[in-house]
Amino acid sequence: MTDNQPPVEKPPGADFRTARSLVLVNTGEGKGKSTAAFGTVLRGLAQGWDVAVVQFLKSGDWQVGEEKICRELGVDWYAAGDGFTWNSEDLDESRAMARGAWEHAKSLIAAGRYRLLVLDEISYAMTWDWIDAAEVAATVAGRPENLSIVLTGRDMAQEVIDVADTVTEMRKIKHAFDNGIVAKKGIDY
Ligand code: ATP
Ligand code: MG
Image 1 (cartoon, rainbow, N blue to C red):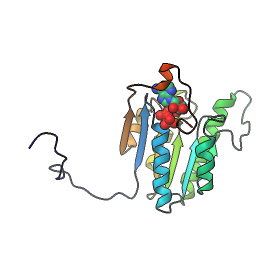
Image 2 (tube, rainbow, N blue to C red):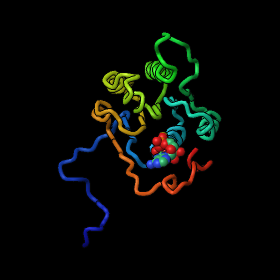
Image 3 (cartoon, rainbow, N blue to C red):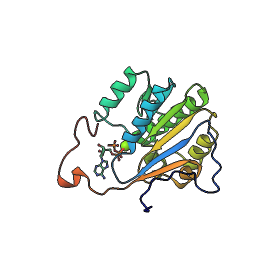
């Protein structure tokens, strides 16, 4: 028996149980945070769940691929800037759009009918103090019991990590971009 055998028994002392929902964080510098979130969207759709995605950064044309196919599959998709209205003249546009996305995310959480919600690139809005990390963490922690939430983006706020069940840090070993290769349709968006 070598150390390379797959584990066959549950860890000693672990008391396994089912969960009504989970909170997942995909963070880190490497590629794959949003891709993994959309993989989870596919799994939720396969279960017949109501699924919603909120994108916190205006993505231009980059993510039209997943947005188009997700909408076709019945995902409720909101991108920062959708339904955007000026709240105050001293809010800059990106901040106001991120705050609008968070208000929308809160309404989706409160709606009670979703089983999976992706908050894509939400970390940046907290890093830049556009939305309050403690409020995000408290809202996620107080979600309806059947709603799983995936939050993505680099440098995820510790408050959010603290309330998550599963936190994955994507670590860059190589990235094509470092070799001068630009984002590729079908792979990066
Ligand atoms: P993806 O959407 O491909 O899963 P991601 O969500 O992990 O990437 P983001 O920070 O959201 O990463 O990056 C958005 C875009 O930048 C994507 O096209 C992605 O391929 C690219 N990207 C991701 N990580 C890196 C990196 N370390 N260096 C350069 N570009 C990156
Ligand atoms: Mg991403």
